[in-house]
Length: 184
Image (cartoon, rainbow, N blue to C red):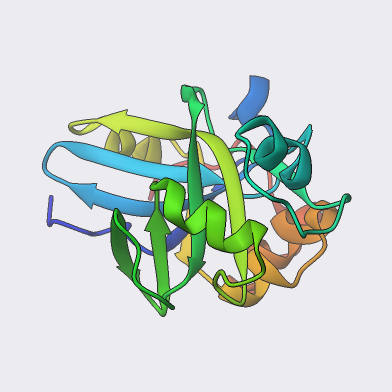
């Protein structure tokens, strides 16, 4: 495996192959190395709004009441992750490429609450994680399709159409896919 093979890519859950919370999910892979992979589900909004989350953290919240916090995955669901345009300097940021960064420090949340954060961002609670070789095995089992990530899909595409929009990056319409794809 080469380091970073799936970094800055979308993983699309294959219909009929991936169930549970990951069914119909689009996951942005922020890191992929010899130890495994880490990503954020970008199309599963939670019932929690960004405004309510910030208020719970005693952070002033000058943001839209409708803006949701997303379920990022089943790992560390009490921890927040901010996927954003690579703008500003924050205490704990991983640059993921393609003009995107992932920040986990409180300072970015305070800036967002006060209207001084990055121009575009998506906040999740939790992340999706794979151990060494696990993602590669799931790819071989046809559980996921991968395509280079698109910031337009992350920040501008309505949540309910993100999976179909990401599939179109591959030149595929959702109705053309089946979980019964074989190996060549």
